Image 1 (cartoon, one colour):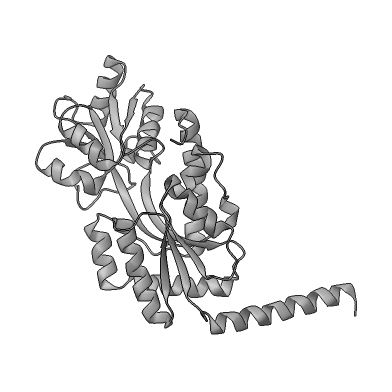
Image 2 (image 1 turned 90 degrees about the vertical axis):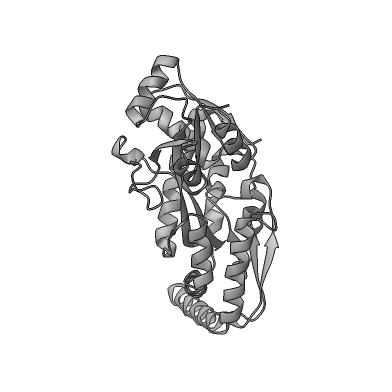
Length: 318
């Protein structure tokens, strides 16, 4: 048998093995690593997905909470796991931002295979009522006159922080970032007038916007939001402006396509369960059920975008 024929024979055998593995998948419990501590919103959603997948696949999907490092600890485990579809990762956008924020993380994007993006949490740029600006151009003029505005976010390197960096870059204003340890402490300080501008998820902002305690001047999405319908998009002032906090699922790179296809099908099935959709919408999410290739494109685009913003900001992991 020639060398070329030998390679063809080996490839054919591998294909048969892969198909057989897919037909019997899963034969044992699946491990779903959630990049969050038990009890939070991400953990609750992860457990919902696990429940529905377990029922559909007739096999346990076991939650493994691995908080820390903005999802870096969880991502490293999945990156180094066997490529057999039995180890899944449920992180947020931070899994991409980490790569620029912390050069010491123990994983790369090449080691993670995107399965599906399930949600997008849009971001709102808001000001305290003491700030006279009611539109983005007015806020830019106000900032330039005063040498910048101070703004709060949920933490250094968060999508909220980097949304502010992108705004400052495009508007050419020297905004002053004040990081907080979470969205809750930031909002408390913001409502108390300790900071002039707050950048947070639209869902976290909407009740305070509706009560008049803060003023939303723009949202970070390409299209207006249902929960803030009268608030313009940043893209209407700066074309292409688009940032969000997404949720999605990955497995180890190198996992055979038939297995990824099964996982994608099961995750989308769970995504379409009424309780999952209700929980996501209740948290202010825009619902998405992307294909692996669509999610891979989002991941690649966000890596480039946030790498540039991290560099501009000079931010480092805490």
